Length: 401
Image (cartoon, helix red, strand yellow):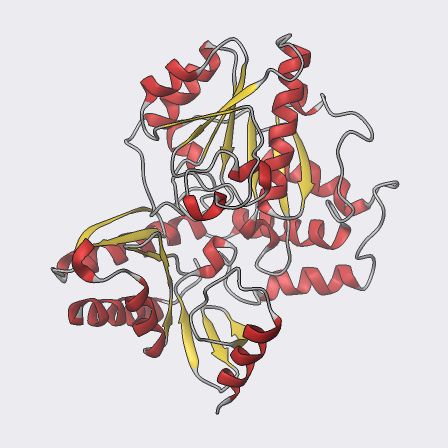
């Protein structure tokens, strides 16, 4: 029995079974490459669902982390920290907004945005207590807390976890008329992903985001955009909303904001909205800690100084063109935006997981999403020859399918 099998047996015995990983036990990463505990090398074509836009152990980000950990890693929010003060301004400016609330995980930031939106509705729209509602979309993915799964349409996320939090209306995605019809006098916000990554990389028609923003403005309703997976250069711009000049009222970020080194998320908003929060009404022990803020500042610097958006566009275009040229019978559709690509397989192909398992044996790591979609999201710093190698292996495996 090799080290991989030993460790998998260990976690199967002592760990919770809330994930179904591929049988790979990783121990080291560098740029676009990973190595397992038995020394096998892999190419990362998943990027931890977008958390690794800058690859593994990016030297500039690691340096920022090391410099800060030698000075101050954590302090209570009973005090200010230098890094929090600087990060708040830099992030707000970078997002074309005015204020920032740093948190830890993406779903924690989503929960924060929901609280802010509800309180804004009560204080600014005069909605009666406990009557606020928020519009969400079918096939959404915003995390797995009780409140967030309350408006999920995915059975596995909900079964066995009720009762659920009220106050949400879930409607079809990519239907502007459905948004308009769902809004009533008690609606405080519309929460949406510009691209539904977890649902299989579902890209709405061009102009949809701008139309939703227009509907929200017409009804005096907040637009909350979840760019946890799509933000920070992944889709070819720093933010998806830039494609349609649809700056949201609240923007939720996470994953790559922590540079692939540690958890960091944030809600970024207009000041009049964020100011509904008063002292003691919301908080987090580790939210906005100096170590995370130092890394977040380094992330913003990289995004401003490197051509990562252009690289994302090149990566995505290369993947889509090469896969299309291969004329793979098992592939029903190739879609995406920037370096976020979904390969939808024919329903008779036997499911996407088997292909991901085969790719792992060929040294390329990716993951299925839903039953029939393979999601590809390489680090934005991937080298051309690595990208070509990974695409070649994907084509080889799909041809055998």
